[in-house]
Length: 392
Image 1: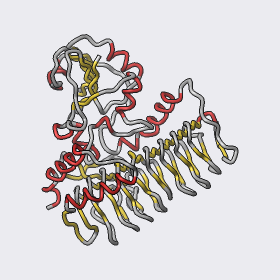
Image 2: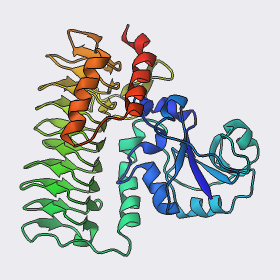
Image 3: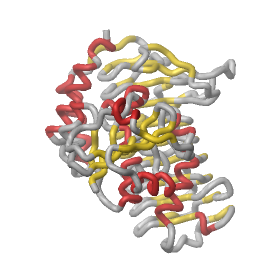
Image 4: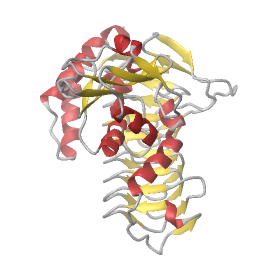
């Protein structure tokens, strides 16, 4: 059977994170949503997403295709219902189409599919807004930990560490290194990916995931639920945040209740506020509505799109949203909405020249022995063009 992860209108609510990827490529828990479904289904999936993303995230349409909503995390119950679908039938919850099986080799029409879908009452994790990524991350880590580690044996944990809670809730993949750290599993498990490292003096409270080839620098303090995606380096103090991958916060400074995309860098002593002085609800800029919206949360920090960077001592106010490919520097608090491809800070912004941004991105890729593909460059060019009006 051919499985395709599709984006619905929620894609817009998840900007700027989804400017450069389908919704299912969001990391929540240990895995991306795509990786979760591929683990459950034991195979590779394709995508139905925005047209300009399709050059990289391709869709394969056949006359026996099951479309799955990319914002929904899998469960065994959902999987059973999906695999029992008849042709041209689906399952839904309210106005959300969960899955649909088609016998025509064409893209999914969500509105039409809803009309022939059965209502279900299953409970599942769903990413509807950017702040769901960190606020639902604890439950997602626990689900992924059980999925990944079931019937497997962890690599041994060095005796130089101090464990508070059950050591069985710590799992080390092959090549993981953890020395002289304090690991507390009372609130949730701790997962250390392949060739990842927790350096000496670090203190970690679960739920926590450190994905492959990533590192906690010396004496890092981590409050769960927190996920550090692959090929990332972090230090300082981190609380209830998700770093998608290939991003660095390598020095002191606070990151809390935040989501950081891929290929980002936070300069030394960068700090974000995650609580307003009046303890009121935090509002975030919403791209679909082009205005600030109430998150309903008292704690909400920084959202940063792919390829954005900030200089040393940057101070982000509560509920700051940074787009794709921005470069932020200077004193004071920059605006709480920084459009994609902006260059500057509190004293003013100008356009970050596209070619200059790409030059920097290629240097960053080269540090990890990766080359930027033509498809990735074209996606960034499209985002640059789409967001020109935001920079005026």
